Image (cartoon, rainbow, N blue to C red):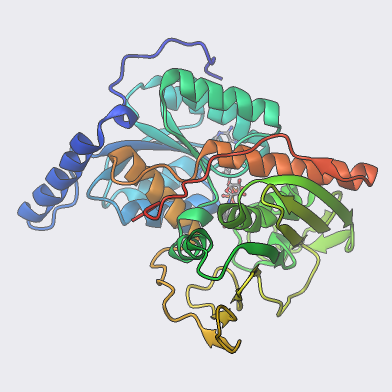
Length: 416
Ligand SMILES: NC(=O)c1ccc[n+]([C@@H]2O[C@H](COP(=O)([O-])OP(=O)(O)OC[C@H]3O[C@@H](n4cnc5c(N)ncnc54)[C@H](O)[C@@H]3O)[C@@H](O)[C@H]2O)c1
C-alpha cells in the first residue's frame, strides 16, 4: 500500500479548484462537446480511477460515469482478479478510450495522473484502499462503509483534511431527490417536528439474487451482514432527516444458518451464515426523536413500508421497494385544521438516477464545484459508529451511547 506520509506528487488538485473555475471547465467541456458534433471524448475531462472492478462497477458506476461522459473519463482501473480490470476498460472504451489496466491499486496510483478514485472493493478492504488513495494525494469516493472502525475513519478523515482532498462516502441516499424532498419537509417544519422513524431493509440477501455476479459469501459473514450492506441506506436516510443518533439498543439472531447461492458464477454452492441475519435496532436521536430499523437477510419478502417518518402533524410513508424509481409515496396530512387522510405525494420530485448512481454523480459534481459535498465522510463515520455500537449492544444486551456526530446542511438550498 502507498503510505499515508508519501509526499504529494505535485499533481494539480481538481478538488481545490474554485467553484467558478470548475463551473467554467464544465461549461467549456459541454460547449466543446456540442461544437464537435456530438463527439464526447475531451482531453480535459476529470480523470478518474476505479479500484475493484466487480458487480457494482458494471451495474451502477459505469452507467453513472457514462451519463457524465462530457466531463469525466475512466483513466485507469485496478483489480487483482484475472480479466476484471480489462473487462471494465473494454466496457468504457467507446466513451473513454485508452484506460490503463492494473492488478494493484498502488501501481494504478503510481502513475500519478488521476484526479479522483472510486473505491469499489469488498467492504473489508475499504479502509486500506481508501488510505492508499488519500495517501497518494488523490480525491476519494468510498463504497460503504468507509472504514472498519471509528478510529480508522478518524485517521482517514484526518489524512484527507491534511491533504485538502475531497473524501466522500456512499450510500448516495442523501442526494436522491426523494430524500432531499423529505429532508426539506423536516427542515421547514411544515408538519411540525419529526418524532419517529420506522424503517427496514429486509430480503433474503445477495445469495438469492439471480442477477448477482459477485461472490455473496462475505455478505453473510462478520464485518458485512444485513446492517452494513443494506440497513446502512435506511440509517443514512433517517439521520439525513432526523439528525445524529445519541443512543442505540439492538438484538440480532441467525435465523437461516445455511444458504444456497441462486445466481451468478457460484450458483448452487452452499454458504454458512456466521453473522446475525435478522437485526433489530432501536435508535434515540439527539433531537429526542426515536427510530426503529429492521435489517435482514433472512426474510423472503415484506409488504411493510421501507421508511415511515412520523411528524407532529403528519406522516410520510414510502411503500413498494426502496430501489424502485416509482415506488408509491403517501402523505398523511394532519396539520392545522386539516382532517387527516392519506394522499399520494405527487409533489415529490422524480429520481432519474438510482441511489448508487446519484452518489457517484454527486462526487463528480463536487469535484467540478457545481454541488457542495453532502455525502460527507463525517456522516459515513457517524453511521458506522451507530452500526458498531448496535453490534456491541447485541453482544452485551445493553444500550450504547454513540460518541460521534456530523454537521447537517440545514439550509433550504442544500442541493440542486
Ligand atoms: N453489487 C451491488 O449491487 C452493490 C450495490 C451497492 C454497493 N455495493 C458495494 O460495492 C462494493 C463491491 O461490491 P460488488 O458487489 O461489486 O463486489 P464484487 O465481489 O462483485 O467486486 C469486488 C471486486 O473487488 C476486487 N478486489 C478485491 N480486493 C481488491 C483490491 N485490494 N484492489 C482492487 N480490487 C480488489 C475483487 O477482485 C472484485 O472484482 C461492496 O462494498 C458492496 O457493498 C454493491
